[in-house]
Image 1: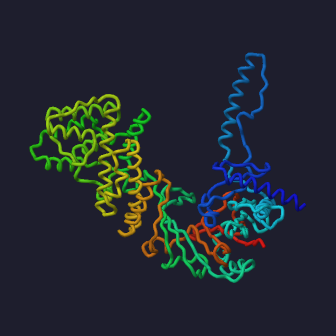
Image 2 (image 1 turned 90 degrees about the vertical axis):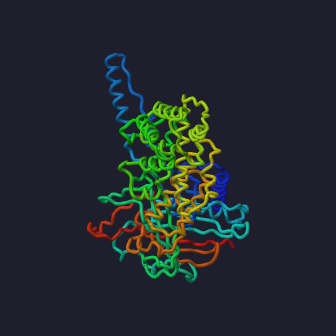
Image 3 (image 1 turned 30 degrees about the vertical axis):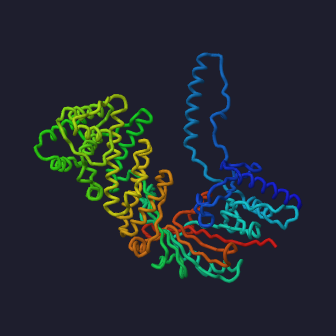
Length: 600
């Protein structure tokens, strides 16, 4: 019996070791009834606190196959043509119904194993790491193992886990974890107390060394409308950590350490950056058109055609008798967008009053062009006016677009011939937009003294191809969305906004563009106390600990507004009456217990 268990442990170890050495993270079916996944622990909320970003093994039940079109039974056929036609129509209807039924079936999420199977897997894992078991070699440490459980035992265990403890290169112990869960309740008297948590810890461990608290508050994000949660892709949360917890659900003290987590999605009409977002989207559509050959034109914001707007602009320049600088100031004032989407915040933060000729032309064209023909016709009007000396527009000294170079040549009555055919006009318009938007972002960031030109060199480079320039511009836009959130919504002081800016710039110099990325910033709780002190946390945790270093053991309880376990459905307590008018939140309870098994 013992040799069979050890043999099973070695086989299980070899499987995990093979998966650990592979770069692939594809699911692996073990003994038909167990699926093994390799992933980062932070992908699963309840494990994030203990595993962080390190890789872990997840064991669960394979998801059953619900429906496959190829699995349909064969239908009988008839030699009669009429019957064939009728059967074919019926079969087609059945196929459509079956497809509709398949599409309407809910997608099955992760499936748990039985508690007996979970304990068996943990037993094999622990044995395989114990060098003192005679038949087991001195095996290298494995990633932590976590197993989903079906909560069928009296303790309602949802997860069990194990991780190795090493002394030098040798595995000297294993920590075993058990995670139990309870459904939501609004009755705070039914929640676990600190005394009960301490007693639970003392059952397994020596005297308590510390009781720490942590909490997360949502400052901006999902909202609840008529008992339905409306998810927002943007969110601002704050994580607190503190010592000396005195009561369950206590508000984090001002002495806590606090970390802001800001994730911003583009396209929110409430954002002060919305107009810049629309401008960037038009720029992106031009870049995509050059790459794919097809352009999705945005709905024009002007009723006047692009050609007529350009003609009027040129006539305005030709008819004025003022100096070039006065003329530019006037046309810059007249060229400010007048759409209904403008907001005072946007105008005061990002709108510039020093738009040169090329930038003013871009403003008109991006609001009105709907075809390649529009772009070519507008630029033809401009190049002809330059060639014949009808206009002498001024441009910024550091302008780098092709049209800006033609304007510089026109000062000396020497203009290169430009063939406005094919994709050339689109290239020229894309350059105009890149030039203008770069200056918009520089104007704000440097004007607010949040960075310097040296720190922006990567984002402003024109040496890379236009597609990469657009990507880097999107990074800058994302950065500004984050800064605006910190400044306008949270009201953070200059020193925090400066650090946030440097953090975002450093991140995007080395990392790919990612709208889902969550930027973090250390702050003092007093700066945002008015946001959270009268609110309820979305997650609150108390943790009791003993021991030091890798031999530290912890027992914790987490209260959350949502279940932290995604493979079981929590039913409402039939003995609990819910007061619809009550503002008290309902909390799910999750307890994590830990045991240390030393290898003698």
